[in-house]
Structures are given as C-alpha cells and as structure tokens.
Length: 594
Image (tube, rainbow, N blue to C red; front, side, top):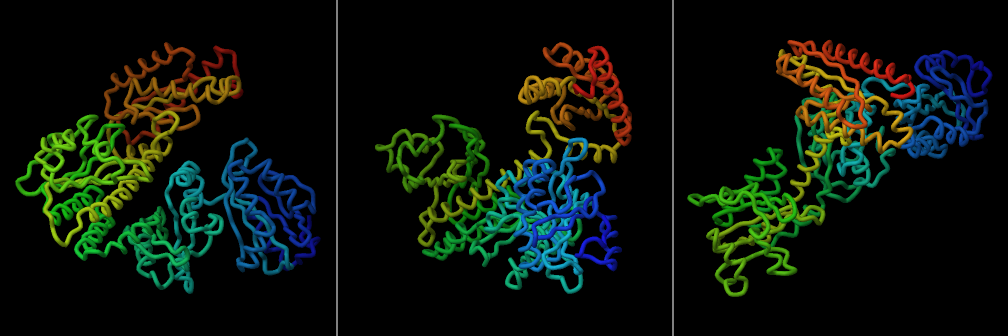
C-alpha cells in the first residue's frame, strides 16, 4: 500500500517509515480506537491477513500458527490492546519490546523481537507494530533457550542487569532478563520487570548495593550483601557477578527475612548474639564454601570450649558422611575413625527422645540407666557431653551440626547459638546444591546423561588453544523419525538412551556429547592413532550387534587439537556418507526418515 493512503501519516514521514522497513521483517499499523490492524510492510516470510483485520483475531491467528506453544500466553499478554495502552500511555513509554519463539518456513522456531512503537507523528491511539530478527547480543542472552528454561525451572532468583552510561541517565539500570522465582519474590510479573528501570528498587538508600553491582558490571568484581527492600518489606541477600558483556551484571537474590528476624530476636545474651552475627557474616563473606564453614565451626568450638565440632551430611537413607570437623588442641579426630556412618552405628537419638528437635546432654553419665544403647555409642567416642542439631532444608533432613565435650559457659547459650547457625548452614548447603545442579544441567544432556552442545563448544574452544592428539567420532541414529512417527517419541527417546549407554560402556561419558536430536560426537584427547581406531571399530561392532539399533558413524584422528574443527568436519562428512549408504541399502529417502 502507499504510505500516503493512511490518514495517520503524511508524506513527511515516508522516509522514517522506509527506514523502519529496512530494519524490520514486518511493520503493521495498530489502531486501538477501532481495534483493527493494517499491514504496512511485509519482508521475510508472509504473515497473511486482510487490511483492517481485527487486532484480537490477528493475535489469535498468530498465536495459533506462528508462536511457540510455551510462549503463547506471554505473547497474548504483550499484544493485548489494553496492556499496550498501559505501557505506552499510562507508563509513558515510547516503545515496548519482548521476544518470542516464532515458527519459520522450515517449521523450526527462531527467536524474534516484537516491538510496539509510538511515533511522534501518529494520531492518538495509533501505533506501529514491528517484528525483526534478534541481534547477536540479544541472541547471546535469550536465544539459548535451554539456559532460559533452566533458570526458570530451578528455584533460583536470577536476573541480568544493564547499566545505562548515557549522560543524564547514569542511575538507570535496565533489567534484561529475570527468572520466574525472582519475579515472584518481588511480587511482580516478569513482563513488568524486563525492559524497565529497576534503580528505584534500591535508590539512594542503598547506594552501596548499586556500587557493588557497578563494580561487577564494569570491573568484574563480584560481591555479596544484604539489604532491606522497601517495596516488598523483605530482607534480601544479593550476590552479584559480572555478566558476559561490560556494563552488565548478573544477580542472584535470596529472601533471608527469616534469618534476619531470627538474628534480631536473639538478644538474650550479648555474646551469643555476637557469635551468631559473626558466623553469619563468615558464611556470607564471599570466602570459598569449605573455608567459610570451617571458620564457622572453629568459632563455635572455641567459644564453647569444646573438644570437637562436626557436621555430618545425609548421603541416603540411614547413611551419613562426616564432612566437616574442628578439633581442639591434642584432641584426636573422630572423622578419621568413622568417616562413613551407617544404620545402627548412627546415634538415632530421635528414637530415644520422640518429638525432640535437638539433642542436648550435658552429662552423658546421666543417661546410662535410661538410654543405655545411646550411652554406649557415645562413650565409645569418649563423649562426656554432646549437643546435636538437625539441619533441615525445606523440611527435609540433610545432616547434623554437633559438638562434644563442651564447657558450661555462663554468658553463652550454646543451644541457641548452634540452632541459629544450623539454620544458616541449611541455607548455605541449599545454595551450594543449587549451584552444583545448575552447573551440571548447563553441560549435561538430561535425557542421555552425556554432555551437551554447550559443553562441546567449550571443548572445541579449549582444544584449539592446546596441542595434543585428538580423535573425533560422529554418530547419528538411523531411522529415528520413523520410530517417533510409528512408535511415539518415548520409543525414540529410549533409542537415544540405548545408543548413549553403548557409547558410555566403551568410552568415558565425559568424552561423549549429544549435539543434536539424534547426533552424537565423541572427542577423545591424547590417544595414539591405532588405539583410537580400535575404539572406533569396537564401537561400530557394538552398534551392529545391538538389537533394534542402526547408527551411522564417521571418525577422524589428528595429531594436533588446534585443528579440531577440520578434524570434526572430516568425521562429520564420513558419517553422512555412512548414513547415505544406509538409506541406499534400505531403499529409503533420508529426508523423510531420518
């Protein structure tokens, strides 16, 4: 259509609109007064609709035909006419933008940026709706859908922030990404946080927090602190680290209101309070996990005049492992004598004292007649007095925090101290497990139990900087699509797991990568050529002898890992030749039955 045909624009704005046409795949005119939409420009693809289409019908059609099912709800909220009015009129924004996975002509989904603009020359209630590809920086943050889903699924309050260095906007901090858990913690919808300035959450009252984030964004200095959020009334522990790009930082937030309230009310004895605060600061000091915990149990042990302070962690039912221990001078280690504690060897004092939250026995001899079984276990380790506090994580027992042969110190409530510290220890252990889970899921494929494409990319990057021999094997399942179509995707998943199991029986699982739906790569470093070839032939035989499996293979060995990309290309090419032979022999077209 001609630009001058629409009353919302005149010839003076043709150049502006043509510029938009050069930047965007699609440019549409939204008329919220009549709730109609008119196509101004269509570039890549062709979202067909008639002129003056109903906006609501358009939203439904696009949701059904183009938007990824997991993104439909968010797309509908973003595109809702009333929400557009709120963002661009009530909130006085010049544009609104969000990202949704969009179906491409080949059937695959790709991230697209959806933008609604308020041009200065448009009539009231009229806007421009544009769609374009994402740029490389946005792709780095958003198109890694596995990571986005991972952060959203884990109970991790995570966000990425961008500091604005534009003169006059030095205090503007734009949220680029926020996980569902963080949005819930702050009592907001994620769509109402992403793209907005979050500086007001901190403000001048918490300049120290802002400076910590700046240090991470521009100097790569990580940090951790606690602040009180006026908007939510919560005490928040915030951990800050640098992001991939200068000027950005990543934050992890944790609601520590309960911990803070606990500390505030522990004022019966000043020394107890002081020690609790000291232990808490030590755990949140930024020191390595093991160093911080060892420092904490030392503080508790010295304050209590104890022979030994320990932590045992639950491995599985009725099995425990001693993981931390502090011993006073000239006191032998008990952890060396019993690193693993199983079944009847455990204290199991809960059975002796039903309903008790913790075990406190100032004189072990006092239970000799009433609880002889427990008494004999304690005496076997020269225990004269004992205190043991269970450590729970969201109601699940994960270990014990204990001390033996302590002194009766007048101005120290040891039970109160250790119960408080056990609460913080639970939080620390929970945080550590989340980090380990996050790290593990970021490099391992959950279906097959081998490494994923991201791990493969890291291996390639590392190998290119080294100089050692390396062998590459490409393996691709034959007929996976036919299995999925005829027997269901569960059968296809079982096939992939069976293939990966065969590989893991032949080589270390850390050398195996699932880089695509049915494609695997094995990268074996520092191995002689003949040994590598022996593994290739053995693996090929394993596949041939396995029932119900057909795998195309190709391999190549090189003297220097610096040429890993060339080695991989050769192995990949040979694999595809093997796959082509399979389809020729079986009289099938690969494109229809891969």
